[in-house]
Image (tube, rainbow, N blue to C red; front, side):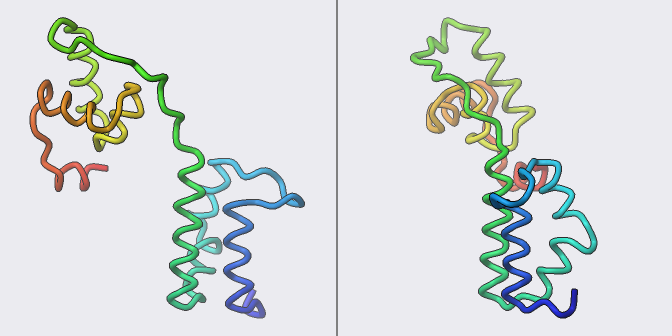
Amino acid sequence: MSARTKHGHLVRIWLRLAGSKRSKPVTLASVRAYLAAGDGFAADFVRLNAEQKLLAMEAAAAALERFRPKPAAPAGRVPWSKSPEWQERVRDAARRLPDDKAIARELGLSVGAAAMARQRFAGRRNRHTARLAA
């Protein structure tokens, strides 16, 4: 593997994360395995220059983003004050999920509506704690 050029390492990262027509389909398990393997992503990453490292990190983020769950169907207008069921759903989502974007995706709301509902029914969120917990 030492005969590979810096560009060759970057191409290997792209092919492992994005796949190609000639390779087998990329799955979440294969992306996670490649990122965790000792001779995988880390071995290729250390041989790159700063600009290529940024490209490799963007490729890894894009690969993981492809496997995020699809957003729920839009909920429409929700009568928050009259619906204890929705209030409990927001409280439950706020306990489990790391940020307002994830809450919005799960409940089918806009990020602004999810943030307002979370603050109203689950309390303020300590942003630093949420980042560390995720």
